[in-house]
Image (cartoon, rainbow, N blue to C red):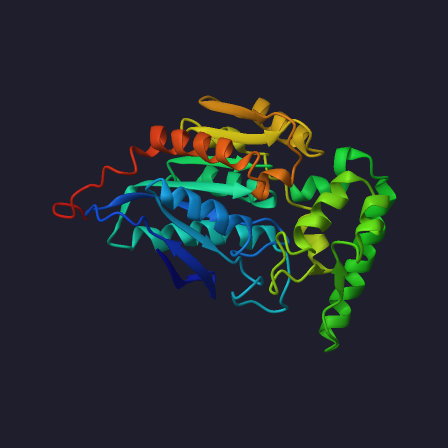
Length: 315
């Protein structure tokens, strides 16, 4: 069952979808926070993963990050890594306050950019007992260095100059300057490479598009993103279990490989053979394997989803 919910995060109200299993087992269950990619909303891949994991027996929460989708925050479409990390922690608080959730069995799942945001959230929030990522991305690295670290240094310097100008424009009362994310056409996207085309094909076609996935971000987000480093303290996740899932054909696969090397045990990097970064968002060729792996991982870390803890005697 899917229920629309709201909860606070650093002074803003976030909109989410709470997924609960359809069986009628009573008591408190393990729960998983599911966080979406940078340009996504809860109705896209995060909601798909949340729904599939709820079928496996977990309570799951997919939500729109601050400034995104149906959540509060102005200027809308600002991408603030620090707030994204706080949103994940606030989602955990929301779940802990739910009668149907076992507060001692909460995990987190981050997809794409949230695969980067979820790591610092878990590193310092011991309420989260286990964490997984799918197609993880460090947005800071991507903006500083480009995909594959092929971006010339002067590109970032020019963007930071423009971000400063954009801040002044907003202070003068002008609308927030926006930056388009995906090209207008498939031909334009393909001319920029397969990775760009894959993102366009998911977000800008009926495959994955959603009216609130706006294809823009506030330009001055760049000076917030550029100072962010997703995996700098990844070793603090230990001794809690870490699973990172990536496609062998993903342009971003090196980020998961490097992150898992820095992490402490217990940890696992699980490869999906032949999959690209965006394939893992929704492709039925790969999704059952990913969900089965996540089910096994969260069951091992949080306990069987079907074994609810009785309500009496807790809290």
